[in-house]
Image (cartoon, rainbow, N blue to C red):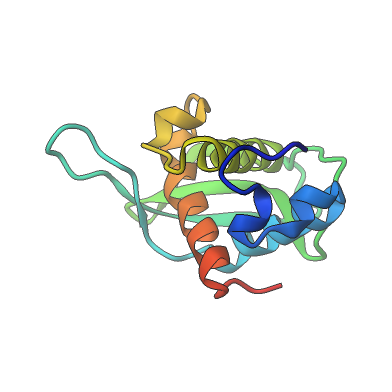
Amino acid sequence: METGRNGGWKKWGLEEMETGRSEDWKKWLWRQIIELQGQTFRTSGRGGQLGVEFVYSISSTGSNRGRRYSGPEIEGYGNELWIIRDGERKRKSVSRSTVELAYIRYLEIMDDIGVVRGPKALGIPGSGSYLYPVIKRIVEDAKDGSSSN
């Protein structure tokens, strides 16, 4: 992947992106997603209104309704992120490949202009509002060096 004018992927502590070792960053990203499951996030909201609080869980390996994924697997975990609001799992799941796409777009925007202004900037209809706060936390933790390897 090419780097932009603001210092490239290395600026965000994600050297794997720049070397092109796609399995490394995909596995790393999914591990971060797994570690954050069960933590409370909030969508951005609209106008002066607060966003919706949510948590998420990751599907388990071998679940009949899991999505196919050609990337590296993490033992014991599937490839879907399930949104949970008000203690109930919604009929809203996000595929692992969609998470990866949102992550790449987030990094590209950061690399290009230095700030991601909200979920619409990711261009992921239907799940961007949920992915934005999660990815933002992952990137901030990676910059601070507080994410796991």
